[in-house]
Amino acid sequence: MTEQPGEYSDAGVPSFDYVRDKIEGRYATSVGGTELAGETPEAADLDTAMAEREKAGADRLEQIRKAMRGE
Picture 1 (cartoon, rainbow, N blue to C red):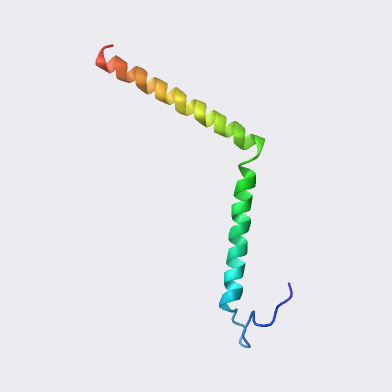
Picture 2 (picture 1 turned 90 degrees about the vertical axis):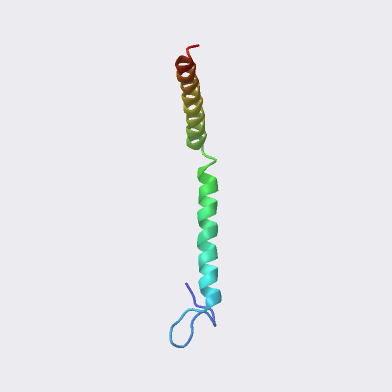
């Protein structure tokens, strides 16, 4: 990595703009990685499995409620 003038002071302290740019770059990389991970076939399979599990849980809860009401 080459240093641009103004990135560091003579004492070796990074400038605010340099630090902000590094943080924004890392954040953008993280967000992009998360978005890409969510678009994989494995992520779609996991979403489907989670939805099925939620539905099964809701159905079972309804059965328990009906049993408690004596229906």
